[in-house]
Image (cartoon, rainbow, N blue to C red):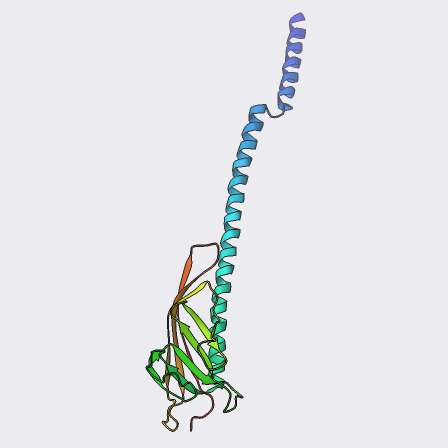
Length: 211
């Protein structure tokens, strides 16, 4: 009888110990390990997120620079198509020289392209687009001279080479006046050493008939 009661008491104690073990919380060591793992995961995640944000910011800045170049070239092509009296000059006396008021071919490629804008009169000066090899920029002048030409490309754009090929400017030669623009260079955004090279070709044909 006493043995049965002793067995029951022992089983009751074991049951209480088992219930207590199941209800036990985390130990200090387990908490430290869990916090350490969480910190490592968060550090890696935040570092990756910051890297992605920085890369996206640089990509947007570079895209803005390229857009600046595209806008400058699009403006040149649209204005040339509506203009007349195409004149190509190399800037060193070749092709048409410095008299930008007369039409002139420059089949060998020049650094200056001049034309009369749409709606201009005989007395109005031509517009000039000039490649400056010293500053590596594309400049524009509204008064017919290269002295007052101002850059129209961003400082982050470096133009290594640019040529204007002008043909068909002689009236009655059965060739419509045309300018082919070849431009090569590189562009980069502020705050990054990465640069993107570009090689662009654009063509503008005079819309008014060359008769």
